[in-house]
Amino acid sequence: MPRFVLFAALAATLAACGGPQAKADVVGLRLQREGRAYPTLTGHFVNRGETKITSADVFVTLYDADNQPLDDVMVQVQNVAAGDSARFERRLDVEAGGAKLKYIGVN
View 1 (tube, helix red, strand yellow):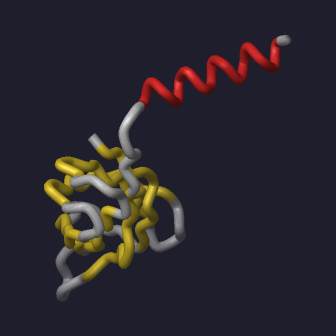
View 2: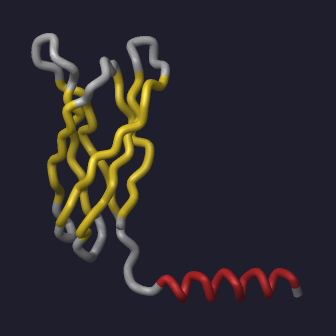
């Protein structure tokens, strides 16, 4: 009996969500450096879903030269059509040596 209740609650929760889920990914995430300036974080946000994404927040963890976490940064991406991608960049104010995608929040 408890399994049925759990299954019913899960089914009701999924049904309440409705509509296609937003599917997104980030490819080509990297740090670019020109001269002695702080690096710039760049990448491509890819909408793999069936509907337009009007706004998304891309959270990235920055690492120092010893691969220790420095900070998390956020880049906002807007108006990406279904199946399309958008390039993003953000000039950093820290001496980062590496970057790794942490989370994508689709608004």
